[in-house]
Image (tube, rainbow, N blue to C red):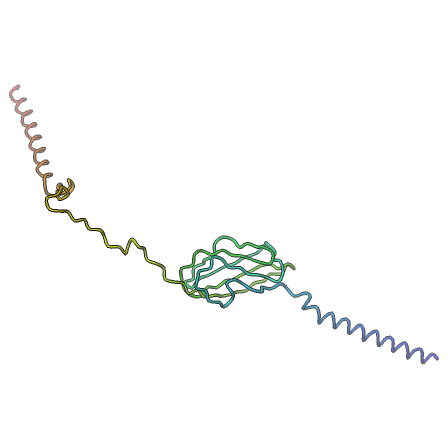
Length: 196
């Protein structure tokens, strides 16, 4: 009787141990899915995409809401110049980063770092390629300089006063002023001599 009770007790104990092991194993196997950190689910422009029109912003979406503190987005163009404009904006599941007008074709790299809803940082990179149309040259520089044509004998054929000064009447005017000054000095000297 005692022996059968002990056997039954051992069976119950073994069953309880097996059940406990199964519960613990199930929790361990299910833990990664339940405690997985938030992650980025997509972006506009998409990672690896090619755009033919310059985007005004980068928009990234995540699996859960992003904490507004600690968000950083850096966008670097093919020439190594940073093209992000202003600070990133968090709106629920989305983070948006404005861009300056893009003018250089090539690969752009977006590096991001956000803080997930469970407090863990999420960082990564995405890339897109821009094939932009060539920048139009300034229309004013391509237009030929206007040439004014004057009819012979018209008033416009008379050179302006500034041109006359380079070799026309100016030397005569200066010479006349010098002669008048010399005549005045001579008159003063003669008047003093006579009074003496």
